[in-house]
Length: 146
Image 1 (tube, rainbow, N blue to C red):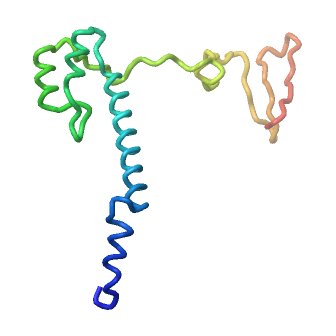
Image 2: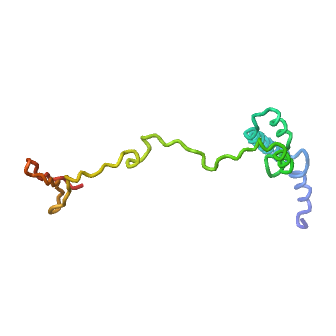
Image 3: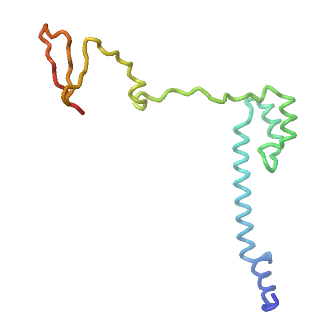
């Protein structure tokens, strides 16, 4: 400031005067932000309203705090006076199973038991079905290895 004494007046004119563009824009941004915050708080508070109109009116009478949707002390008094309004929600609500098209193959298909009469053997690098009852016309059939 010692090198540029005229800078103090210029800075005050740009940033500090009520008619400066910076002050006007920053006030508008602050107003918009506070309005959005109030709108969000109002919507969240409506989600927590009880179905009973009388209790809902009492709950809306509790103002929001700077850190929570409701002023903590007044909300605690309200809950003590009306304990039925606060119901604990289940921690793990039951979920519907996903559609069959999404489920993995093993969980949707029953497990097939292996036929004891049919055995699979590896013979010289290729797979064969071996039927123990070869006298009835069954023969070994080669399977392609995948």
